Amino acid sequence: MIISPRIGLDIGGTKIEGIALGPTGEITVRKVVATVPGPEAVLASTAELVAALAAEAGHPVAAFAGVGIGIPGQVDRAGGIVRNAYNMGLSTLALADELSARVGIPVSLDNDVTAAAIGAAYIMQLDGTVAYLNLGTGLAAGITIDGAPIRGTDGYAGEIGHLAIDPRQRPCPCGQFGCLETVASGSALKTHWPAGGDHPGRSIIAAIAAGDTEAELALEYLIDGAAAAIRVLGLTVNPGAVVIGGGLRLLGDPLFDGIREKLAGWADASEFIAELRLPERVVLLPDGSPAAAIGAAIAVND
Amino acid sequence: MIISPRIGLDIGGTKIEGIALGPTGEITVRKVVATVPGPEAVLASTAELVAALAAEAGHPVAAFAGVGIGIPGQVDRAGGIVRNAYNMGLSTLALADELSARVGIPVSLDNDVTAAAIGAAYIMQLDGTVAYLNLGTGLAAGITIDGAPIRGTDGYAGEIGHLAIDPRQRPCPCGQFGCLETVASGSALKTHWPAGGDHPGRSIIAAIAAGDTEAELALEYLIDGAAAAIRVLGLTVNPGAVVIGGGLRLLGDPLFDGIREKLAGWADASEFIAELRLPERVVLLPDGSPAAAIGAAIAVND
Image 1 (cartoon, rainbow over the protein chains, first blue to last red):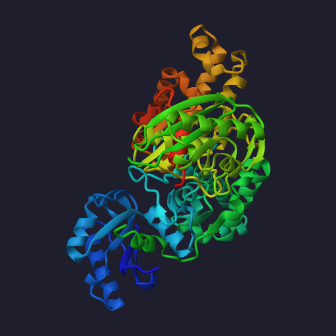
Image 2: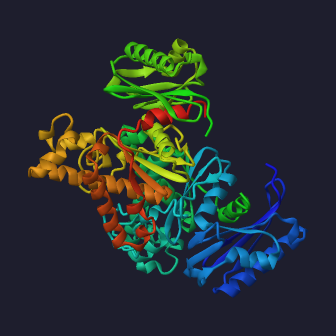
């Protein structure tokens, strides 16, 4: 693959991950900085990060085709505007135009999970219909076909975290009951296992090994909801691969094996579900892959 | 739109609907014949129908770019093979090659609901992300983006009828419980309202008006499940329009208004769901549109 060199940023609540892609599509530079909330701080730090990535790559910023940004919140890609990204103190920001004015090259925005889906398909060289399931603070998915994302009419494609189908019927801040996000997300882990503190994913496997039954139940809910999300994706778009990423990817095999076992049980119970071949099509995103930054870069000017 | 003239067939359990499309994409001929089950009968009658459509259009069959077929069952589009189309007595048939040998022009196959989705977007001139919900003997959906269908890895995209999320948890022949098809389909109407006979859709509205409470409950289940299917489509691909078609489309306003009310209630309960704007985006396929035949024709050689 030959592309124009470009820069990708994944702006999250705690850190901003930046990469530069060279002309053969490889990562030439990778840098991470802490997120400082608020519009001016986000603009200043991203502009500085773009300059630093270019400098380290040995080129002027103008040598790059553009900057692609993956960011949570409600993203208006056409207008380059992000709304309701409360984690980083942004209510409404014309991020694309404002940053472009500072760095001098085009800037495009994408929802962070959509960007990660594009990046996952790219990194793992997955063609055809691919689903990406992001288990982070929330739950959301991205769908790509031959690398191109389905964004939907208003950018809400893949928001299956608010599919209200969990039989436990727990209340969701969105107003519904039983959203998949109420059982299969980092915020759900915090609710169901308060002893895990602010980052339950870091300690839950050890706690389960030490006999914490509340932690065990929280993981069971997570596995149930993640598998249900994958079944929804399977029946809706019939992907050839389902990539699991997001912050909870760090749970590794206990999560991965649990999801595959659950899917295998459903396949055993239904010949139709078995034909979707979900247990063998689920894969983990390689550990530490900057999928959203890469995907945002790939989607520059597409 | 300028296209090469082509022929489209929608092969169903009771009838085969055929159309010819002229060079500006308009229907020039339309014919319907009864389905006679079995491989030889299906091949003979479809070959005859193709010849009759061409003759009535005033051209030799060879003047058409190809024949597109929409058919239920498991369709291998690449191989041109249909499997498990039990309604028409076909277990495995290389329909594309066999019919092509008889009519002398290329033949391509599509799942009937996928074909109807392509046809619906074409007929109604719907661009962007469009979902088509088919309420027939079963429940299934098709998704198109700018007219092009998402078929999925094995042709199972849109098979949301087997999403096991209905709280009534009724058993489904597929082996699961609570599939949307167990409440929102023609076969579900037959189960829940046996008094309606083999074609409950034809008399259920009158029966409800006459005070049949069993019929009323069956319709309520149908509306619930159809609305749930539309919410799944909304959260997965965020369509700009959701077209309702299939045999139960004949229920008209009682079905349509019921679905929109249900969706409006969910939107009232959740700001997030409201943003999907489903109540205003649901539309009925125009009555009597041969969507699957048109869609199959459009998809010839794509």
